[in-house]
Length: 547
Ligand code: G6Q
Image 1 (cartoon, rainbow, N blue to C red):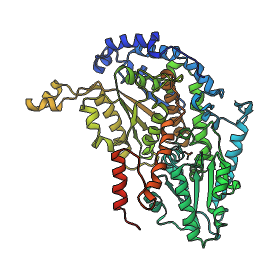
Image 2: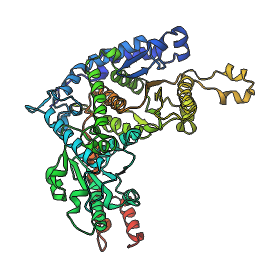
Image 3: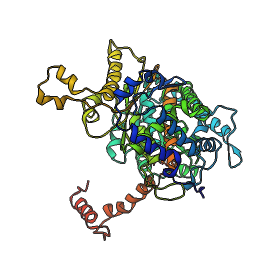
C-alpha cells in the first residue's frame, strides 16, 4: 500500500504559488526582460552538453524558488532515490522502475528482490552486440545463404516508438547498406507496404513484445512468418535464420516457434515506454552498431546521474518538469508543444507523446484518491520549420497559451549551403516573437491601415524553452530522452500519481477481442452492445466483401 500523504494542493508551496500567480500572472515578458535584462543569461542551465534557456518563461526568481520548494515538499529527492535504489515505486503493478539500470555501467550494483540486476543487463547487451556484429558483417546468413540486408522490427507502443524514433534520429550513423523498417499497426497495409519491395532471403524480422501476447504484434508476426515461408519454399527451419524475438516471455516465444537461442530478454522492471535502451533497441543497435549504441547508453546514464545528484536549481529535468507543471496547474494550460529544429528528430514528438501521456495521464493518486487538479498535459509537435507554416498561427495569435520546447543543434550533421544558419535563425526568431510579440504601435509604425492593426498585433507573452546541443550524436539523443523521462517523473511525483502503469492501454488490449468473433463469425451473431455499436457492426458485416 502506498503511503498516505497530504494532497499537494494543501502544501504550503502550492498555496504560495497560487498567491504568487496572482501577482506575476499578468506581467508581460517584455516587462520582465526590461526590468531584468540579465535574466537572458542567468535563467539558463547547462548539463552534460545540453544548454537550456528558460528565461522566456513567465517566471521570476521567486517563482522558481517556490516551484523548487514544491518539489522539496513533495519529497522529490526521496522518490528519486527510491527509483534509483530499485524500490517498487510502480505501486499498482508492484514493480521496481529501473530503466536507469539499463544504462548503468558494468560493475554498478542495483538490487531488485535481493539480486543485482546489472550483470544480466550487460549479458544481454553483450549478446546483442555479438548478434549485431554478425548480422552487420554478413557473417549471419539467411536460409538460402544470402546475407541479411533488411531488418523489420515488429512491435507496437513502447516496442515500436523508441526503435523508430531512435532509428530516424540516428540515421546519419546507420549502416547504409541495410534497410530498416518498422511495422506496428494491425492495419495490414503497414505490413504489406513494409515488405513489398523486400526479398525474404535477405530479410530478418525482430518480433519485439514485452508480453508476447499483444494482438497487433502477434498478428503481424504470424503474417511475417507466413510471408517468409512462402518466399523461402515452406521450410520451417528458415524461421530460425530470419526471426528473432525480444521479450520477457520465454514460454510464448517458444510457442510462437522462435528458438530461445534467438531471443533477447528484458525484465518486468522495464516499462514499455522506457525500454528503447533494453533489448527492444536491437534494431537500433543493428542500424548504428554496438559502439554507437553504447555511446547512447552513456548519454542516458550521464543524464541519470545529473538528475540524481544535481541541486534542483540547476537540475535540467527538474526545471523542465517544474515549468511544465507551473503552466499546467497555475495557468490552466492544456498542451505543450515540442518542436525539434532537426529533421532527424521528426519522430521525437511522437515518442514523447507516449512517454509523457501514458505516464502522466492518470486521474487518481498513488493511494487511489481522485485528484482535484490537472495531471499530465498533452504533448505534441512537429519538426521546424514545417510547423511554422501550419499550426504556429494558433500558438502566436490564438486564444490559448501553448508553452513550447524548441530543440536545436548548433552544428548540422550534414552541411548544406546556408540551410543551417537559416534554420537556427528561425528557432531564435520564433521564441523571440512568442515572448515579445508585436505591439499596436509597432504595427502602425510599419504603415499598416488602422482597420488591419488588430489582426497584425501579436500579444506575445507566450512562453518557451530553448534547448541547444552541439550536434546530434547517439550520446546527445540518450541525454535528451533521459531529460524528458525524468522531467515526466518529476511532474508525477508532485501530482502523487503512478507514472509507470498504463491501465488505459491494457483496457484497449482486451476491448477489441470481444468484437472480432462478432465480425468474423458466420451466420448472424447475437450482438449485445449499445445501439450504435450494434448498428456499426451490422453495417460492416453487410457491406464487407468476402475476399
Ligand atoms: C508502454 C505500454 C505499451 C506497450 C505496448 C506493447 O509503456 O505498456 O505501449 O509497450 O502495448 O506491449 P508489448 O511490448 O507487451 O507487446
